[in-house]
Image (cartoon, rainbow over all chains, first blue to last red):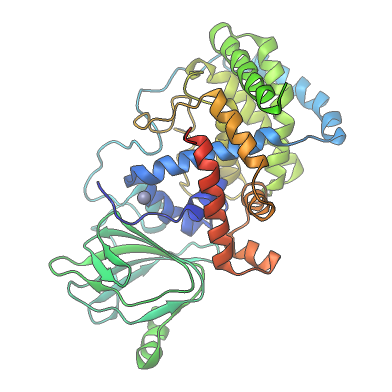
Length: 227
Length: 188
Ligand SMILES: [Zn+2]
């Protein structure tokens, strides 16, 4: 898949460092699962982590602790299973067997379940359905389904929004976003996506602050959306 | 000997130790790796928020995995500290933060690099070059990189803590990544 819109490098660093919220991580992992460019960047960011790990300087207090732990490790070597069998070739986090088309991307399954068919969409506005993930760390994770050829309300954000297109497409001031593309938006952006004709646009979005819709629509929509 | 030569030699040294573990189940080599890396992994885990006792436990588990999965080690492809970084981070996210499905812990990390499909050969010279580039980062970029990796701070938390705009945090991290990536990718 040739994708046009990728994760911000700053987001890739935070993802590699384990510094994204679970909700942001779920969206980033969904993108990385289909994007070779970001997979390579992630791997680079992990190497940076490795280099930094090597540069850590243990203190004397740590060394004192080390003797006891070393003894414990020696016992583990004696008692544990000698060696694990190499796993099957090609197994890896991103090399997933061809999945059932009814399955959601793996990183989203803990939040929304496994099956597209079993999703319980909630109507929030004409042509717009939503599911909000129940479990959460403070950030918000939502699935959005917007009817084809629909104009979303103009809105801006207070924080960061990470949106991955799962199906369909939309256009906004930043360009055309199709399946697999990710919109990694900061707080300076105000946008008004318009969905493409033909199929509904389904996307997953993580937000670290409430959305702000301007004007009459905001007052109408915000209580219903609950964002 | 320049610091860069020392680093190349270091990377070679650890790679040889790992090969001895991989091919001959050499316990002494494993313990040399253990003595060097276990305290570093513990420190890293504490930094990103594992309580002391948990950091100890997870560091032990990470090093034990290295022993158990040593047969998969390919010195031409993988760097020991990158592998340890990945497994320590994943253990932390799984056990301390209890996040669902961040990355499949069962499947990752393994020696053949994560995808096998993309080129990820990591030469020792490249690793040494990366070390140098980290040392040469401008102060603010180095600080943001450390806060990301060693404290697992989000962009917003960094912005709040240092009193700088979110956009500046992101653009500085982006620039730092591009500088370091040149080292990773072996370009000049
Ligand atoms: Zn990408």
